[in-house]
Image 1 (tube, rainbow, N blue to C red):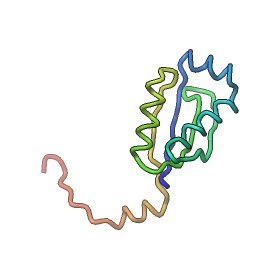
Image 2 (spheres, rainbow, N blue to C red):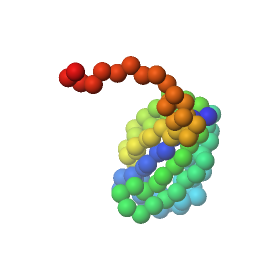
Image 3 (cartoon, rainbow, N blue to C red):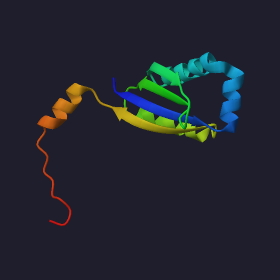
Length: 106
């Protein structure tokens, strides 16, 4: 199952929710969200700095990842960035592919 890294930054209202629910309460909410699209949470961490949480999700496909991102962002309580994570084996496969490409301006 593809893996996705979500970096989340809470708004002021989102932080109020974290204070109310606690870290484990938020993790449970994220686990339920992932399960609702047939996925699972591999890891979830809270952090200091610009990003408040890092979540690694196993999701069935890009559509499920997009649905998660849209739903989270629409709440207005969290801003997210999502990255597709690739295994070393997937990079090996990509490196073996023949790609036809023309450099711009040539």
